[in-house]
Image (cartoon, rainbow, N blue to C red; front, side, top):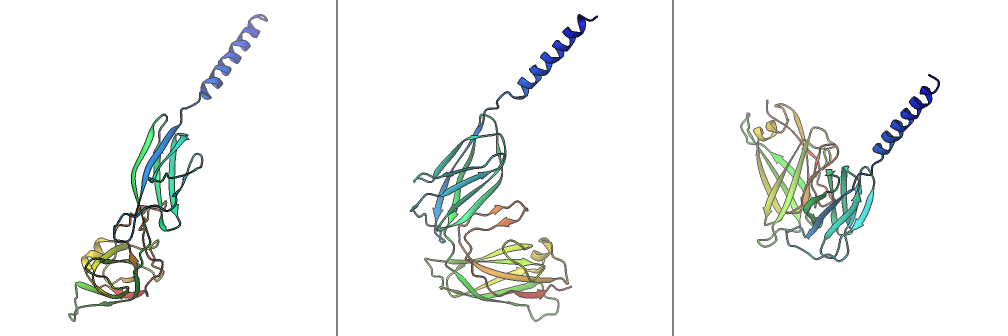
Length: 245
């Protein structure tokens, strides 16, 4: 029996060592690649004057830069879930969440549209209702500068929320007024449009507006909020109105 015990212990140690070696078998990394395209606020493609900085964050963190063609590739990425950020001095920041990297595979992100922030500034907005007591249409008007033209049609994006702190990152619904060819815009929305977006009859609604790029590509952030790129950082006034009961 005394001679059997050392053999048993040796066998256990061998099995333990075998398991350890199996747990540490290296897993081949993957890669991520994509192409950044650059546009002005009217949808015209513009050349890069410098590279776009790329950062990849997740299981490990990586940084890189695009080539002059806008292409980028990051090698040696361990399998897992990541989020990517693209920044450039003259373009709106872009982020993409929930990127899956598989062992030994290349994740293709395709084309990512980055845009210059809009030059359109919304100086003021207002809201009007039909004279009837039970109105079902809400009309928004506003002033912008510079004025839009037939060739350079401008865009305004309105954000609607349930608090006075409504903003591009804190809102319930968002709608664009497009093809603006003057220094003013008008947007008609049905009350049902608000009801479909989570508002209730008799509820207060707050609205704010920003000049917007016509081709800005949106993304969903880590909190599930759709973020619109290409907005002018200057906001309009905040208005409030109550939906009919």
